[in-house]
Picture 1 (cartoon, rainbow over the protein chains, first blue to last red):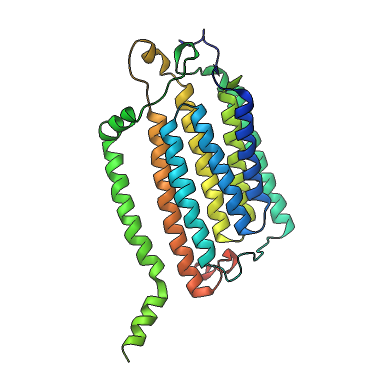
Picture 2 (cartoon, rainbow over the protein chains, first blue to last red; picture 1 turned 120 degrees about the vertical axis):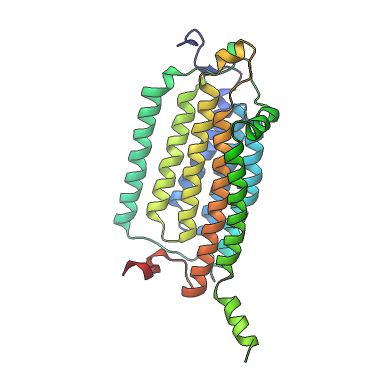
Length: 189
Length: 111
């Protein structure tokens, strides 16, 4: 309302660049859905996550783009690939669901996406304008994020730290599994 | 011209692909990838709304821009990494017991 005089667009962004990265992201996501081999799914997911990181640059969130590349592409995806290697004798094994279930799943996903596109584009998108006045690119600095982390969001920050500690201990304990017990049992005759 | 609707559309497509992935895979790690897609779609939404939301007036008057959407996105990334680690640990344990990660075999709790 207060920003009604500004056009609701990001002026400095080249449109074809957005369409390039958005297209790669969408094709990667479709590849994740349609591919049946888990390793190919991981590679498609890599393309999607990398393209989303590039799109964060368009939204002036460079730090978040770097975080996305480091944590998702460099961390979570490597973790998933290690999981694939540790949990299958044949990484190209096919685990397929019946065709009816597959079509139902695609239909549900597609309908949800269409509903959200309708709601987002028709109902929501017109009421928002870029935060930078006059279309000037505004970069959210790391300093503001840090001040928020230690000020307004100090409690969630600390809780996230505790959560990561619990996750580290819990993951090590759960993944230890039966083999450690077996080894212990073999040691004591 | 790239507006908020473009990013919302991209996010909706990613979300739909994530839901379809969860519903159509029998491999547990594939389902985990679907969850990652959904969390990424949520992140795109948060960052886009942070960019396009109401903070422009404060900036025009010399204030600092609000970064609440970015903070939420950062916490979601942390939670996604933690969730992936725990889920993969559970899958490893499951594989140690059943020598597969086919979720159709995970029927021990179904009575």
